[in-house]
Length: 347
Image (tube, rainbow, N blue to C red; front, side):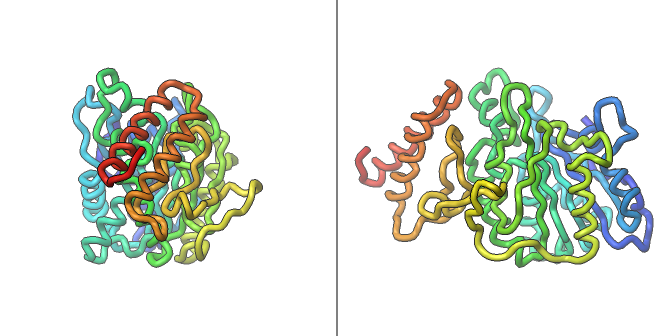
């Protein structure tokens, strides 16, 4: 595991630089190894960005992101975000134009950090121009959900528990970011993995979508851990992020306006059905993620919401193929039935 704090990568001492780019690794990562192919530290993603954009300073943020408590306890997400913000403040970055390039959990940490800064209302992070999300589990991670089912073996850390599909913290953060990115002037770029890691996709396409209107979810032919390690500047992930940095350098302001629409099968935007998914991206068959409860559907009380949620999970259980998924869905079904009984309904 790499050291914590900010590592200067390129151009950070230039007083005339126009913007700073901060790379933020994910669960189990570190501030250098996350960003280069194995055995090739000279091919460092953040360094390439600095070399190709001499007007920016490039940093890499390291923080404790253990996957298992076998190796020591990890800091909860809210505390980790406050800690990360303090590192930025200590280096004088909180009042400068910034772009974040994030992998996996790093994107969740940045969203939480942005929200904390706004809640504190101290003027920090008001110049953030963009966030690039690489395989960020806005809707939760399949691997985290699997690890939670076998706690005695994995001893998942608190950060892993907070990445479980449909976790309330993730739903709340996603809703906040969707509702505020336009007002805050933050551009968004989203990339997701198309290949499996071991036997599963760690972050599925629907979970990688933050639901931001007008923003495509770009497929990258890589697995969860290689998506942030381009082998050359010609790879799509590098070209996309480099172009995004240039776009943010040219001028502040988010892409896209208005509510998200259904763009059909030719686009990688995920459509929504207001009656079932008012606050979340659409869920494909076989997912264990239910419709979010952050905002009740119009004309429905708590009982109606829980009944709708139960119907969703029953449908998903009928389509589920593997035992672990069925187990998770059955627990959700029992929770829904218990809530419905408490509210005076019958199921």
